[in-house]
Length: 193
Image (cartoon, rainbow, N blue to C red; front, side, top):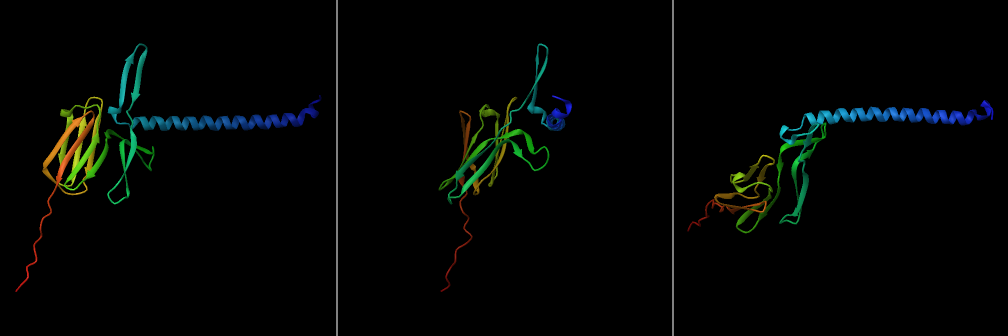
């Protein structure tokens, strides 16, 4: 087969080769950009989420833990209540995630006739490492160990009597119970005779 007879096939191959090399170059540029974004991302991580271990022959760097999730319950009005938990939040700004050193525990809040009950999952801590602080409208949960940190401010659905607070911690589950604050009587209408 002469050069001119084979020319159309060679031209197709050359076009394919040019396209393939250009595509390969674009992929390489994208990989470099992603690598730079990962470097930038890891530089902004809270330092307590980076652990280094020395091994024979070098150092291993571990990142995390990273936790993100949500819970959904049905409220007393029949509408769903969605709550996020974890230490990662989606963001609209680069790097498109917001990472905190503390993890938000999974929380459920129940309101019954005379009580407000808050249940939090905070595994891996001892009860003396848990610090609770309450106001009439908010409960703050904080727990910290060498390897775990939890923090959450819980808005309570109704005002509570802080002095009535009772809490228990068993098998990684914290339960805090408040009595609801008694309604204050504004006054009573008196009929004039």
